[in-house]
Image (tube, rainbow, N blue to C red):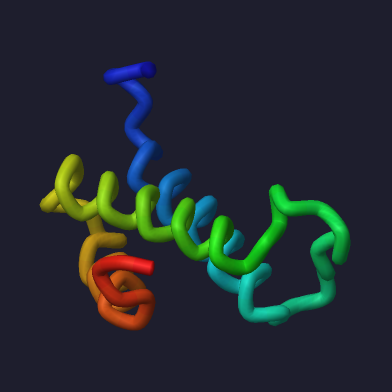
Length: 78
């Protein structure tokens, strides 16, 4: 990684929420139906991973509270 990259928490949050919204069918973008890479369970798992990294690795981030709320919505496991 790039330890000097100051916007890492924001990037993790955006990546997580993008996958979460895509898994829920929100927004204008729709995932390809036959592609397992975009299976809702996989997207939610990746979102959970990104959010967990944000919460654990950047406890002072302004995105932490929103990340914790999204994690609670996702639940701890699939």
